Image (cartoon, rainbow, N blue to C red; front, side, top):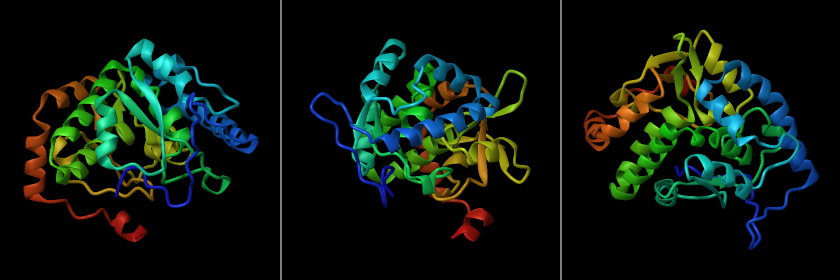
Length: 267
């Protein structure tokens, strides 16, 4: 499945200046999400995310424009945010990451999907992803994944996406006191899953192992039963220096692990 596949939402189109017009109700949805999520991220998220959120300084009561967020990113890591349609394939996704451009789906979730939306919306993209892109290590990791994606065989894309999923999207990390904190963008932007990932006693939180990560199935439409925990943000640098494609080759030869029982039950 492509990363940006929307089943029910229509993309907003930017004008020639890059401006996207949102309705009053859509701005209100952003404000409600921000109000609920800001307390949760301050309570649960990793310092790397929180430092980035302070740097980005997002508006509370309206949906920000991509170009204003890009201005802040350019000052820190030279990244930018580009609006995209609701559907974008792996080829374009990896190419944009390789160019230090983060693709942002332009629609915002409906009230029905307020607490969990499986399609990435503008709140997930901006509130969830851009704070980590101010961190030089996390930003370099995302670019490296993109560069690999532009060079590898298309059949490897889903394996690279799995590595991205369990780090940038839904990764956990230990803080300086050894406490496990949510790091990933999917957790930062989900009012329901951030607390689940941080505190639920039934969740499996495994030490990060790249081969284990690559062989672990996941689904986009439910809360994750398994998360992987980085020892520190510098571990992403170690992954960059490793031969990721060699590990993908190993993972392909060994195959995916059996789905977690919760993945089966949900289906």
